[in-house]
Amino acid sequence: MSIRHGYYARWRGADYEASPDGDRVRLYASRHTDGFKQVAPSRYFHVVPLSDVEHLQYVTTHCVWRDEPFVVLGEHEGWLRVEYSGGRAPVAERLGLELFDRGVYQAWASRHEVEDLHEETV
Image (cartoon, rainbow, N blue to C red; front, side):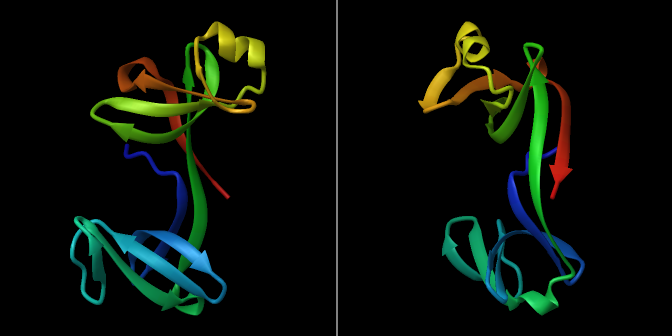
């Protein structure tokens, strides 16, 4: 399972990372795709009318780590960047999580240590 966090759109039968902007949607691809322009290595984009998008949704990936709930923000070489979603500072501190911002605690967790990895959509 790949880790997804953010907007995703289905356009012409394919799913893309997306960024809605009023009546338009910016689509992003990691490889060359017809009609997409390269903006950085392995990063291409294309703007389409919202009416051409078959489906637009916000996706978050969730998991349980050390018996507590987390949102997965990304992954790198077998590690997941997780953000505590339990809302209890004493628990976050007991787990040794990094204080990222006021009330926001994050850590790197081995993918092998997480359980119940699943997506939720809005």
